[in-house]
Length: 518
Ligand SMILES: NC(=O)c1ccc[n+]([C@@H]2O[C@H](COP(=O)([O-])OP(=O)(O)OC[C@H]3O[C@@H](n4cnc5c(N)ncnc54)[C@H](O)[C@@H]3O)[C@@H](O)[C@H]2O)c1
Ligand SMILES: O=P(O)(O)OC[C@@H](O)[C@@H](O)[C@H](O)[C@H](O)CO
Image 1 (cartoon, rainbow, N blue to C red):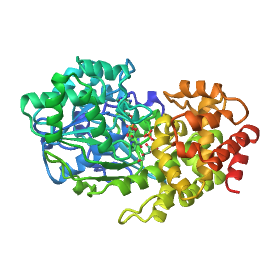
Image 2 (cartoon, rainbow, N blue to C red):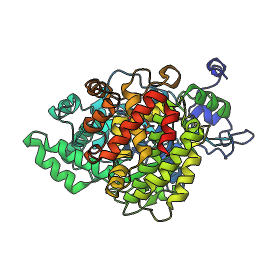
Image 3 (cartoon, rainbow, N blue to C red):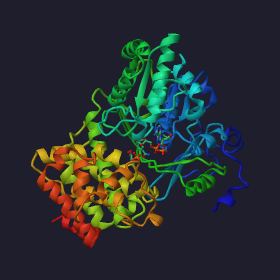
Image 4 (cartoon, rainbow, N blue to C red):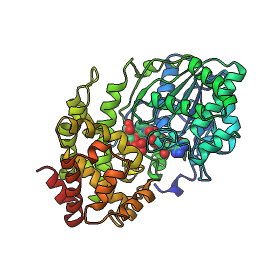
């Protein structure tokens, strides 16, 4: 179906759903029964959650858990969604949701082609930080707000190469100086300041981004932001943050690719309504959190979330195996000409190398959380990656590698090298990343899409100073700020990266993949 075929359909919204057989009677809603959206009555009162980063992941994960939890136990847990992207880019999600009474479709895409559709219906309203900063601060400071959650990507935490708050970032500097804040940390700090002034109750800051120890990271960065405020503001705010704010760690998992026109068409076919902002997602989902909520939380456990004291083993397993393998598939997949992760993992040579890396290079470095045996997890991941319905683009997964690689590969590398093992597929992965980022025409950008990375100009400039066929890779390994110094100083690892760089350059990815397994 093309865009024009959707034109005659009513737009998704509460009225359209009320007028249709929204509960699924008499319609083919896909492989699972179609659940009606959260009823507006269940969301009465002011929203209890303010979410920063109204992107696809939040809409396919936390929003779905929240809607499910509210079906079991009602509560004041509606969500105010905040678009936190700065600049003048269009904001299709927030605008699309606004035109649809805050509703959107989650399309659960099964491997065999079956589609299940649901409408969480938990969002009360949407705000845009860049332009409505004061309203966002008011929402964050409201006594009714009990949880502030985040999916703002690694970039949204505004840390520098050393992992500390980037005090040179112009937006951070502006937020520290006052005025309507635009960064996640500025918004949170000003919101807390308002809570302090008004005597609002404690609050929980819940990071749902793919960062190791995401709650601790957020807390550390917030403390640094507060410490950089003028003295008159600093002490009281720090005392309030210490006494009244918790930052639980969480491991979040569900593959939710970017929305394309095909998803809009699918939503139209499944619903008979026009939805401009549906979210595609895989059937699998998992959420593991510390149960450290200062002012209550939805009954997310009733929706399947796991609460535990120690999230670290789950995070390590997920970030190193899932995300680590994802990045390998992305860079090597691009060099092999694959547009999607399922095509990359289905490439026998590449899929075999990545499975080898997961089982032999990464798995030995991760502890097994209770009930999650590593070998079974790897098998499950390979199955999830192979889901052709997702069409998860290699260029999307490969974007922002300068921020993702340290999270996904560095720990595995450090621990493997310390244990006397040289992970050759990871060395090849790094060589592939360097090639994708710094070499003109390394992959078919027109067909496969652009790999965005804010660090690209810096890394290309660094690479331009190198000499010899493997000089750029050696220089980026030593000075790129991507992998730990232990890796750069490890002669055998550095030589492997250099060797794969030369093979990629002279003979291509197939030869390099074969060499990595010898
Ligand atoms: N999509 C997934 O499969 C998935 C799964 C698990 C975890 N996550 C986590 O969620 C994050 C967001 O993924 P998504 O799929 O929603 O992406 P998305 O592109 O749909 O949304 C990104 C969101 O981040 C915000 N953002 C981007 N740059 C920012 C910046 N510099 N400052 C503040 N906010 C910024 C945007 O406003 C947007 O709301 C990921 O980076 C990852 O940490 C994603
Ligand atoms: O969302 P990103 O861009 O940080 O990373 C891309 C994927 O690796 C990631 O989103 C995974 O799909 C996700 O972490 C699965 O839970």
